Length: 242
Image (cartoon, rainbow, N blue to C red; front, side, top):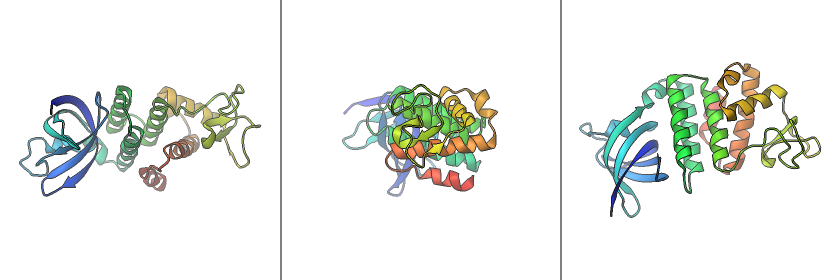
């Protein structure tokens, strides 16, 4: 079986035996990879610290039948240190890698890998509010996977907008005629913030009021939970902290 190299970000790890770990990795060219890192829990391991969650590494793997085997690992980005010491960054990063794990069940793309790396880098540096980084990541990652929310024209009938109702089940904003009873009313400022999160317009995002940011986060969470079928468990910790 051949060996191969790729750039990866560590999504999650599980203990295996007394010294090994099973890693779930999102790679740049090979999609999602599950691999065994032998001996990395020993203090003498040469690359154990390079294969922790949120770390980015250049790895060489041996292609196995069910699980690949990590043979070498060189650090490319140590984002974990800047994330784990801040609760808001840590919970946001967990939600991001959990979403990445779900969104890339089938074939991943290099764009998904680069988007996740950018989000983790921003979290580690504290460039923006952690929840805003997460919200932007979720909207953009879901768009790459074919679930782009409609944020201007009616997501159901296509009537030109913007509109004042948001229905996750229908794909985003909808007109008054398409909105079912009990639909969430979308304030114009919240709609503008959602569009800025998708476009990466951080001057708009950073200047939003806490009320607008909170309203947008609630809609992003509802949209992501609906379309990913199984809920993102880490989002509950973020809601509790807020």
